[in-house]
Length: 467
Image (cartoon, rainbow, N blue to C red; front, side, top):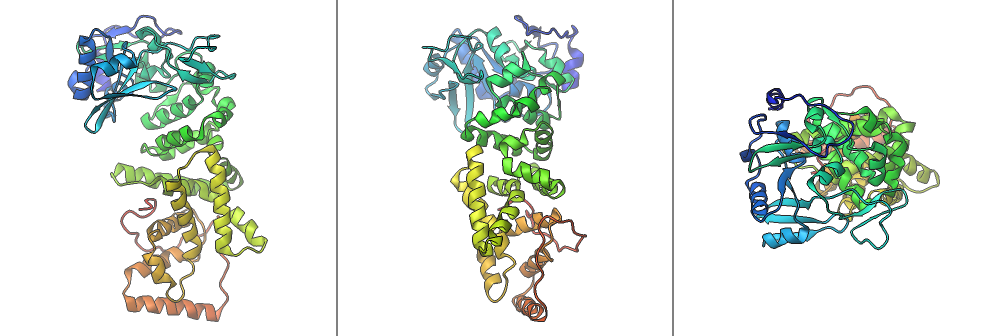
């Protein structure tokens, strides 16, 4: 679809340094986009606003994705109408947001997000202006300064998102050579990259997310300031970063996203303890995280559920064993040491990324299972099988083994135990007792490289679901 679109554009696209004040207008006989490719509810919103005398376009990611042959997940509309004027046109609409006012128009389960054209934040006009504000570093705290269509195009973050589709005439308006950058598979910021990152440091994460999602490269001038400005992410509210991290790792390209975060030194501001573990033990930490993210990507491709708790448990785990060992050296028993270290690590992480309690509790339970799974004597094994977190804990054990962590065959033992009969299970428990009577148990090594071990078949959905 994209190739056809590019080939049918009659006039060559030039790339000026500044954003145009007038767009490249691509007629419906010069591209392959059609109104019936877009949500009928988005088309309806645009048509109602246009009939009311406002400018309105389908805009941004849904236009970009249609050009790339990707089915959009949602549809956004940009308009000259203010949020209050939009709400007046739709009984099923509500205004949301303070930092960035939007209107959500509800059609059953589908929500069409409508934004008013915005202008750049006016410099030196913060005082007394409730519509806009920024801090000393230039980060925008509130952005409700409305403007023209041209203003709106200039204040968008990336060129590939500054594409406006008129569903009535089926014309495509390109203000920032977005079609050119789509053709060349480039993520390019509009305007001065450093200034745009200072306005909103989350744009650095968005650049990485789009590069991973679309398999694009970050254009060199847009990439240049990222490593130097990465610490600015520490100033972003932790609740907002939680939402951004979910977008980064639950879009089906988590493994590639992780590679880019590390490459551009954005991983450390998000996961400081894990970044230290990655630096101290890159082979084990990198392998465990990559395997967890690869499993996550596979489940998303298969349409299977993924729980953020399992994902965060894997991202943070490499920082945990050293803390547990320190507490054990002070005389604390294994399970209390695990619980105390987990509490400290999660508390520190939540200061950076506000992981909700509905996820932090399962994280701790998954980790707690790692100390309980080796304790199989008597009735403990059967009781563990009945534990609601057994499956997630077992999957996590297999993940640790796949990263090279030595567990003395514990994963294989639990795989076999789930598949054999009750009488065979009793024999397996007796064998454990006999082994312990014959020789002292060997200590487990964490994070070391081990040779390959024969492993039993995994259950459906194991190795990263936590379900």
